Length: 117
Length: 110
View 1 (tube, chains in turn cyan, yellow):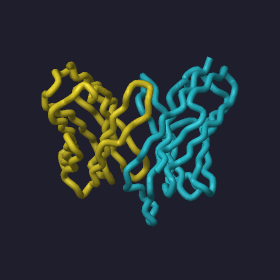
View 2: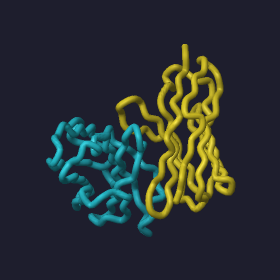
View 3: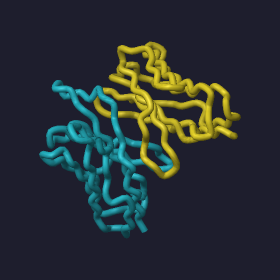
View 4: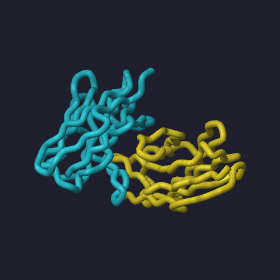
């Protein structure tokens, strides 16, 4: 079974631009979560999607947004990029119980390395 | 607000040694706790998942325990190998999100 895939793997943008990152979950996984990893702040939760709906959201500004498609693939978008947005963006997928709670093991993709100049 | 702490921040051991990594969390209302390893510049590899109702999980040379009441988990690595060198992260899942510790950077010397 193929793992979580993320595209692109590397991205260089300039301040003020916007960027869209893509994540394809493991087949059969319906929940997709996004995380930002930086040397200073470590791994921080951005948001979680299930059934095309955002279920949870971390403490990030509105410039960070996402969506999920009917095939469970997800995209996240960052608008008006700032230097501090340079980070490794990780996507994780998991099964999710019918009750809507994510009890299950999370599997991570290789990440997208975003550099903002 | 859930806070996750990992001690030590870095650890260097000779090959063959058994070792313990520690993870503590402040809010015991968790769904599960997961241990990961991360190699430099790469994504996270899941090692073990412990549900809140479980006390421990084992996979090969790895054993993870969970004590919810005291807010602690340990990852035991037996007979360490140079290939075990990586950063080990613990993460706790609660109602709203998943919180990660800062990690323990492990170096196993041949």
